[in-house]
Image 1: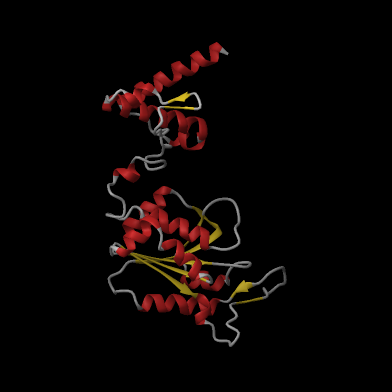
Image 2: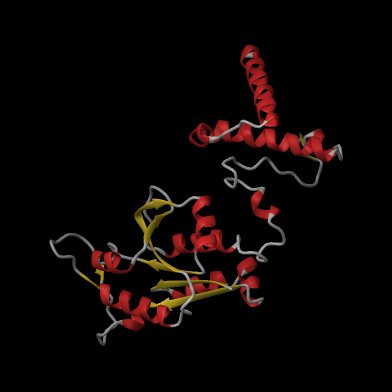
Length: 256
């Protein structure tokens, strides 16, 4: 069983999301252990206060190190000795989260502890003492770590064997091999005058596969040039598809 513990000030809200849909069903089947922990329960004051003004002045408040430390300690006390545990703080100062990170966290660890900060963040001493890595969803800031934590939990858990019906459910998606996913279509065949590409109606599986690969390359080049620059299109099929794409691009330019 793969386990994720989320340290948060809003366990009911986070837990409600984890109980729904695919993750909820996988949890019921015993494939995942997903738990939320209320940080306030580990405070030592009657008001259950978890934050205070920052040293040096400034707006907002900073979360105390001690409740966070004790909450994490409680989680670790319940972990098996052989479990590979990693503590991650969701932070805009962290490294951007990628699909490769989801695969790494699934493969290299048995249990994740995701720490959700709030206000102006957490006392840096907790990070220095307890955090193994910091992760960000991107170059923006949200009001708390709960949404980023749920995103990371979802991205990792869906890769756990048995959570999805087949590995192809995620190996054929965007970012798995460095490309974006090809366009998808369903009924009706024509909608608002827009028809499904004829090749998808041909029943020729090999041609469909090649078309989809070609569309993935085109979409990546057009929408994510940063990803496209890192692609290694060195297989015979990819080289052939790339030449086709370049010829078609030249024709489009000449038509203009």
